[in-house]
Image 1 (cartoon, rainbow, N blue to C red):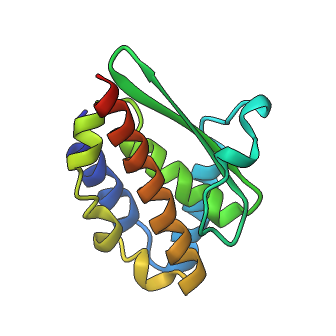
Image 2 (spheres, rainbow, N blue to C red):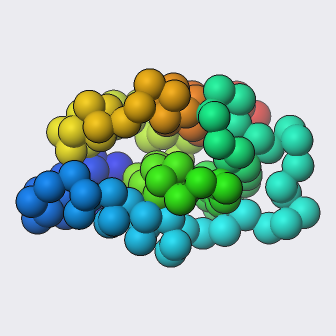
Length: 139
């Protein structure tokens, strides 16, 4: 699936819910099924700067595609990072760099996050794209 197809799938999923309480519950469920970072990668250098909660993110290049794993100590934040991993993981560095991530606005996530959570989400995206740029530069 392309990044855009995954984004469209997420938009359709979130449209099924009538209110934001149900959407938050869905986000929490997504966090529970996220590819977990290995304990050995939960290091200071893997912490996302700019997040109020602790968020560790690890990336590695496998067969030309970036695979992300992560964890957070906050359930909503864990759901947000799970959403980003679902969209961007298993794509080439260039696909990740070029991604627009319109789904975030379409599902109304930015409007329903506190300013600190919004900053955290932007920090996650920034780190994921920086990793993609670094892998693209090495190729």
